[in-house]
Length: 607
Image 1 (spheres, rainbow, N blue to C red):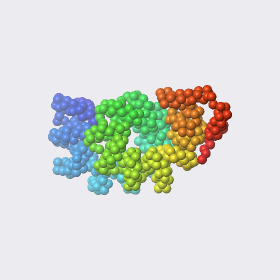
Image 2: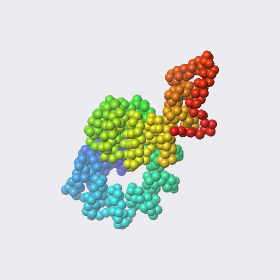
Image 3: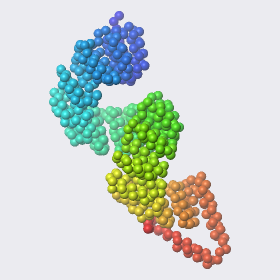
Image 4: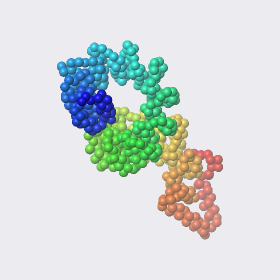
């Protein structure tokens, strides 16, 4: 009894679905059902089986099905050649052997295009162009392939020349030319192509919006996005990602809420954006609402847990992943390294089939955090390649563990230096009390073109000034940070100024700054002030500082003890039998030593 065409098409549709989902298990089940129905010799279904196994990455099974076809047609050969070119270890040669072999007696333009695409995917321009010129005929797919090949190689003139020669163009042709200009940042030319396109598709609009966004022009990107008559999920996700990576998280979140339909990529993009922006609590809440999970979102949340110091939750989520890609493994490895779990990091590193430079650098950093810079140096020399991050990690390994001369020697060997290189040395000199060296390095950095200093740089510089008691210089750097570099001071910067004011005996100014800075003071701020008060024996200020520490951190026993001693000292002074004249002398002396409080909330920095 002949099989109805509707039945054959239903089976073929199921096989295409398995190929798209890369569900080889379901594909095998359908294959078995085809055999049970006596349809194994049906060439139409066999061709779809070859395609399904190829898309699932099973070249051996695809080849086995192909070999079972009694008379392969040109479609059978085209599917097999595409599979071999993509999956074979010697792809293009193996595909060419089939294509030009005696068994393939019939070739059509699709066959030639399959081989042209295989050549293009090698990234070798001139062999691809040579094959293009060998083709007996070209269609629009042939022309598009060669235009895109030049485009991806950023050979704009060649791509434009081929585009101009095309006898006919379709949507892919126009999109290829637009993306060619966008890829190298020629926004004006990309916009010209966009303006003259005969039909502006959602793909073209998305490409144009992405081009603007990648160059930082978010307003034009959003204008193109809002003008799209039909926005795809890809368009929405692209715009959300573009806003997020430029620091516009709230605009990205508003767009995410406006999305009519979200897919797993949209959710993962939003979770990643929140993690990257430091909003880990919100990222975890968003992650919990995801209708389904993927490895990208899970990897972002593993990083979020690690940032919060919750390694247990990070490892638990990592262990629950059904599939782990290289990024997930390296993220977990870096999380162990970051928090000093060196043995766990090494175990994971040793189990990696392929180790990239990020994994090696994480192991280098783990050795550094264990306080073993020589082990870090050994890891460095075992690395198959180095980059700026690995060089900087080695400098930091010596610097952060107090081996400053070795760190300086390594710094001098750097093939190139960036802001991280300079920050590592300035922070180390500051941390270990070589304040003059820290400030000298900062001046050298500005002269050597080490890049714009950032907030971390100024934290180290202000700490160095504070430890050296350089009040005037600390104030100069503080104002320069804001006025010359446009860096908004954070709490740590203010705490450094409080410290240097305290060390210089300007306790009144230090207390005024604590009350007037644009942050609520922490217990660290008040402990800094308390230390200065003790140094300068200002009992009343000691009491103020201790009271504030206890209010912020009631579990601080040392502050309670200081406060109790202050109250006891006050009670003793009240009941003292000292002569009035002697008390007056003491009071007058204390008044002369203690700086006057400001009444106009102005911070006066002396010295």
